Image 1: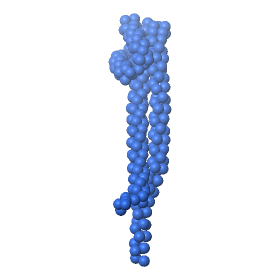
Image 2: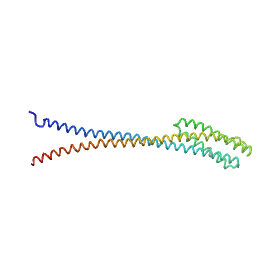
Image 3: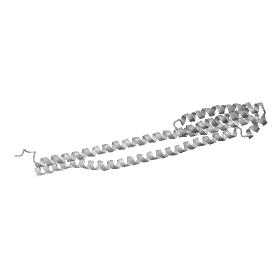
Image 4: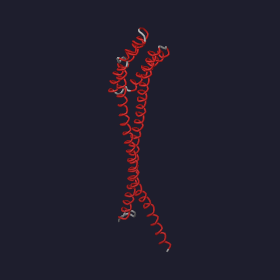
Length: 239
């Protein structure tokens, strides 16, 4: 004779309880897995955004330094011309200060772009060109001192200082163009990372909703059914 509590009805109820429990556990496991996945992907994308922002700031620093260097070279040329024309030591002092500033700024750009081999090659060329420019300008100043105004003006008219300045400007423009190209690329990378984060978060929330809602329904049903059964049994006994 079967013992009480171990008949087919009890086994069926036990299986139903296990089925409900398995659904609840599965729902929570899937929700947790989604949370981990969304969090992980979001973390990676946010890290990419931060890195892109840092590189963007770095690129702006290079562009500002390149623009400053061009201005300094212009001031150095202006100082040399001023000395040739006026013979005033003020212009010669200004020229020397700008030459020192140009060398410092160029060294700074070389450091900022140390990770970019193409830029390093351009800057090596630029260093040669600026050295030639400073040599030419020093030659004009020396001619003004030794042979006078007319000799210095004649040398300037023959291209001394002009050609080297043009070459340096052209190379600086190449350096700036490369940085602007990198800036555009990094902007696209930032936008792509932002869009990917939005998609992942949106999809994660949607899928989590689809998983959590059925799980909540299952939990409610697993609680309400025994209560309804108990209420019915009590009603039968009372009647």
